[in-house]
Image (cartoon, rainbow, N blue to C red; front, side, top):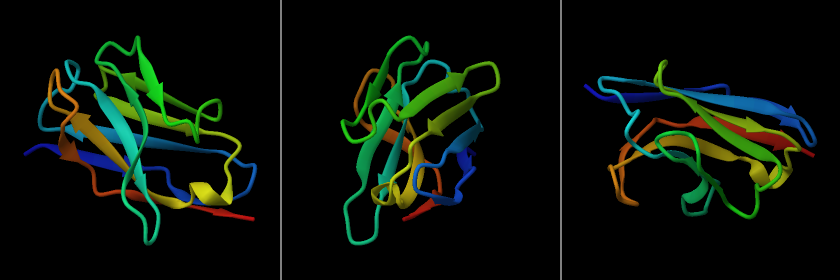
Length: 119
């Protein structure tokens, strides 16, 4: 059974930092692009960041560029998101995602972890 399990969410003051982690099990994702999405209350799920299978290429939403950093460890089958300079508008449930190989379609989702940024 394939599982993506996020951790590291919590409550932080504006300007603070959090590091999210995603542990994958059930199969290796070393050949797949992976990413993070988020969904705020009353809003649609939106793209945050993604990383190529090798880790050599990263992609970011304009809203987080320069503040967030995505990384992966294929040996450990993990994905991280370092979030710095957090703003209240970053408050959302954050989801780990694994893309179908060679496509922009997400095949697997984690259950999500809550990030709350207070002003």
